[in-house]
Length: 270
Ligand SMILES: [Zn+2]
Image (cartoon, rainbow, N blue to C red; front, side, top):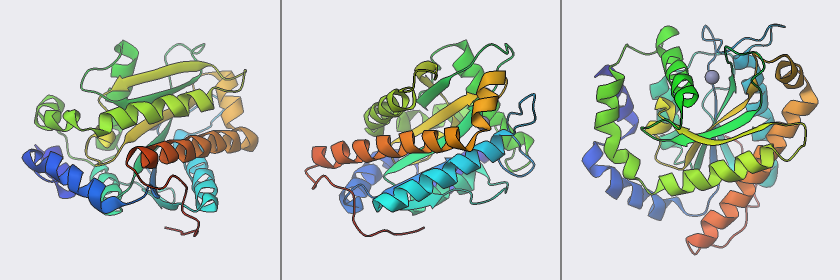
């Protein structure tokens, strides 16, 4: 259970998860801290397009653009990786929890065996994947940590059993809501194919004590998506759509908790 040990660094024992989550809500105050998780990095390149575009590079660029937009709105932003580095699952989860993030957004790009498959899809956590493709994707993203040598081999099924209680978290409702807002905003442009909101057991979403989603911003295995993701304008558009969704989500999240619904005014880095 090496992976559980790893996750427990950033997470309390499962029996305490709910009380801890409630404490965190009480202490957290207004929605103001966003954790952006750029997938892969270093030796783990993620997906690669036929024209050579690499997932780790594309998603880091989107993460930087998103950070800049959110800092401009006055949010505190934490990146789980700043550069082309390998960062373990444990460290990603730990930095999110230590920052007491209000929202965790993991950014990835997709790949499929069929090169005609294209579009944007947003995931939130579930033990059961929405369909075979979602299951295969989560497996591939989870294995990337192990294959890059940053994570010990772990028994995923045992891990899922132990973490099952965490699935009852109230964050599931919030995660679902943010996923829908993000997907809708990302797909506003006519040329973007929306593949909808799905669920799958992504390990990186399991240990974080906050609403959490994973966005797949396009398929590098598709020529058209690869060309678009290669354009700075498209990457800026994706970052803008995510930033707008985050602001809207934060306003609703705060209003529901009886907090004054506006973004913080003082810009803070992080
Ligand atoms: Zn990925």
